[in-house]
Image 1 (tube, one colour):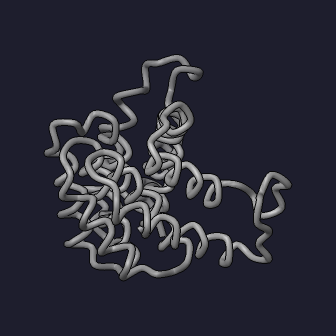
Image 2: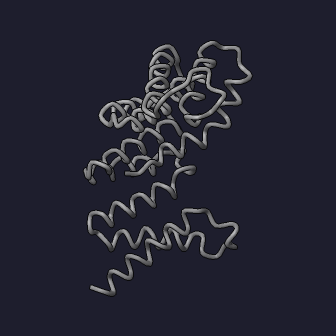
Length: 209
């Protein structure tokens, strides 16, 4: 099961925490506290409340996020929805996470794209490949897709491979590999190696058959 949306959350934390730490808005403080609960390791001594299990910690974070999302609006609410969906996925509440990502997908710009990626990941996990592909392609048609373009194309490649459509998987992967092939190794993004490895695997399978 892909957990890309959790990675996206982590990429947004720096900006989110900076905002919540300098603002005096009570809602922003509530989000910051929920973030702290969700992101800190279980044995972190900085916790005001001690949790026995990850499940207990995530349930506490989810409760705080439910309250926050019900009161927040705009980008603040969208940020809360990302954490809420991630918590739900960690807890195995996939139907609830799907509903949360559906809400997020209604947002404009990058937040809406993250919502569509989340939906795609959930459908992928359910092996509903057509719906997953539809969600991923909506991201590629988003005018703010640049941040997610390559990641989504890699997912689409894996999806095609899972479906047994090796021809389309190979085409997607070759476009990713060619995009970065001429760069110095230090300049290549991590997904380059992922795409290259998967491409070699698919070509190897083709030669064996």
